[in-house]
Length: 602
Image 1 (cartoon, rainbow, N blue to C red):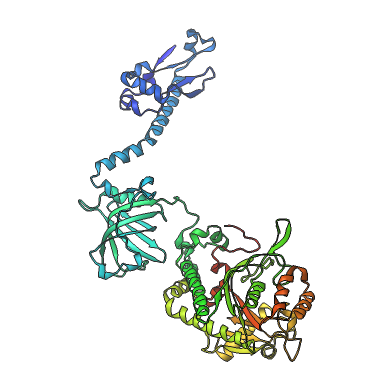
Image 2 (cartoon, helix red, strand yellow):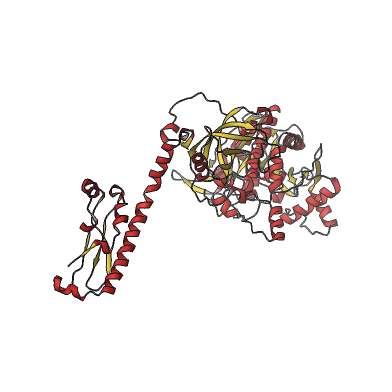
């Protein structure tokens, strides 16, 4: 039999549903077992063909088939069962309406934009407009240049939406960030300037989306908390260049918190999100956006820059040595081995051999900034498998202290430059990672290794006389030196020969000691240096004692057979200098994308 559809659909409700918006028409087919199921009976194309002659409610029917499909079995359907079927059909109708409603927001937004006379003042920039389509000649202003003197001026800026804070349907705040600087932008509904739809668009943006903002600069009466610039921008135009995903791995605000904030939160019972080191490094591109990280790598840039400029002013020449070599450059087994077109090779542990060969090539004074590879399984706060080496090699006239003199003047100049020119960066680092300013002397303190050992013994620390200093001994000696000489930066000379590389020159008065030195900051070693062996026979002997296959460095040794000047040099890790100058607790904080025994990505 056929049951009239009015049992399932209200005439008024059916008539109110535009047929063109329908995704499908649903029927409820009752099975002999009494169950009901939804079935689509029309595609979008089919609905379009029916739109000119929409069916009336009476034409929509639900077929109920009894056993054998005969009409006589219809009398077995009870009234209560019909009511149940009607409820199921009503649910099906509501599900169809919900599906239909989901398709409406985009159309509604479009209609809203069309109704908004100010719709051209905001929106997502079409892809074709950001594909170097044209040069408009517009003037862009850097956020760091925004100041009170620019009041009432119109500016155009681009940056990341760090904070999006809706106040009401007619007002919202947006904090825009450019590197280390931020400015607060205000959207307030105003006739012919800002529409409610524009405010709604602004609050729909996801954090870290890249936006263009055009507006007027205003100066608030009260200081603005949470931004670097003490002005506001009254937004007139807002365009999204690129949307970030709605759910970020972590918020920049959480990644920027200091230990002081966490301690205060614990005292008050407030729950704060702590972003762990592995999470930071896994999403390093986000982590780098924090003010402290922005500052750390600007400091790093300045360290490298001062290193270059100082040495250039001292008549040094910059070089670039190969990183694929046939044998170990430092001795030992801590090398990354690889196959080089069928030949055994490894990544250079340092540019040591080649900067010495360059001195033999009559360059006099050279320096290099480049990658260094160490395959050591060191899981410490100060070791990496790849770091940036700052290397120096130079002829000496009489004594390896001439190299120490360069170290002294270079690093004092570097520290002076950082303190004078990087105060804002140091303040940003200090806010998240508090540290004490580095103490150093105008003329760097020099102690012998034996004098350092004696200081440790007097403090109750026993050290093997001819052994190397371990991490604990270095830290303890650094504390003793700081207390006695009021400096965190000093040079320790005349190390035992047995703990130095094969190319280190022995002392003239005791072959158990060497013409070598280490340099320390805050009780941690940052530099190793020495006078080099320039005598081929002695160099061959020393290499053999250190377990190095002389055949793999034959070209290096041969370079000293053609006349070689006395020379010495040193090497320092860029990341370690930054870490210790800024008082950071882990070298991974000062490595852009760190490589350690457990990390090869990102």
